[in-house]
Amino acid sequence: SVQKVKKQPFGRLVLCLSGLSKALALFLFKKRGGMAMFKKLREDVEVVFEQDPAARSSIEVILTYSGLHAIWAHRVAHALFNRKLLFLARSISQISRFFTGIEIHPGAKIGRKFFIDHGMGVVIGETCEIGDNVTIYQGVTLGGTGKEKGKRHPTIKDNVLIATGAKVLGSITIGENSKIGGGSVVLKEVPPNSTVVGIPGRVVIQDGKRINKDLNHCDLPDPVADRLREMQNELDELKKELEEIKGERIKFNEHSNL
Image (cartoon, rainbow, N blue to C red; front, side):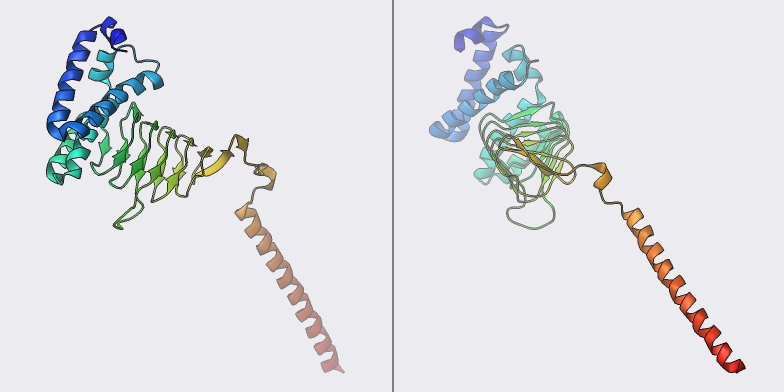
């Protein structure tokens, strides 16, 4: 792995930067925490090559990938947040948002190999919990549904993919190995191994099997036609009542003439 990095353009510079980041992590987060932090930072680079075929070199990824910058800034901000350095943590978060267009609250818990592709417009709330090997695209919101305190943002389990523009809202859980389609709005729990699409989001595939739903357009409800049918029935009843009233009036007139 190290030899491969050395052979790439600016490979030695990458290793030097890695060493500096390791030293910074050790200084900020003590030995054990620093080693874990450095491992996560290195994995954040590795996952870019796994997920993005456009990534060509480590130096390119480190210097130009805004998603990586946002994740690294969050890892530092989250460590400070856990140490009750709230203002400093939030300041780093806001600076990262300004430069990357990605807003991640320092309180959010994010696992290993988290990948944000393109990234612009991504929002991740304070009580959001994200597992390992999760990928999200631009415009994704992992947000709340109100002003309540406590756990109010989603929990994203391992190996989940959330496509462009999707919104996952509220204290719900997205199960392992699930996929959220682009533009979907998810408001309910998603079981593991599922594919969700639509507004509101609905499960269309679970455990590799398509969920049977009658999508025949001829059988879809038509509220306008239903209302017109009700009005026609009411009109028919009124006509019937009117005919009965006319019949009774004719009989009454006949009796009066007698």
